[in-house]
Image (cartoon, rainbow, N blue to C red):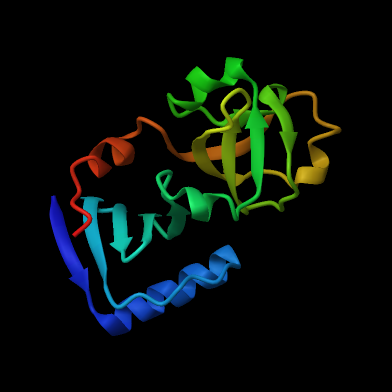
Length: 159
């Protein structure tokens, strides 16, 4: 896997862009290491921050619990868990409850029994529409437990 240390100025631009897209304050970091998984995907690691860059999308990494808690979420029933961990999108029937979010927002997926983060995705609808939905996709699954990024992360040094 190719690893690239990103310059201070480029790191600053990336952090600014991530902060704007997520609408969250991200602490300044001197440098980010970019671990290239494919041409379209990278695991970005900085001091106290880890996220994915998938094409032009920035996704908080599932190991970053403190960061994930700042995002809107949906809680899914236990029947949805195995599908989520195989990359399935979140379907309306599996949602037990949710916070407020808008179309295209980054949304975390939590399982109902242990309240653990299972996945991170992108909203395909506004949250207020969920009540009137009986079926259909609600969240596009972008990163989930046991996906290739999760497995590759186990081999990445945090130094």
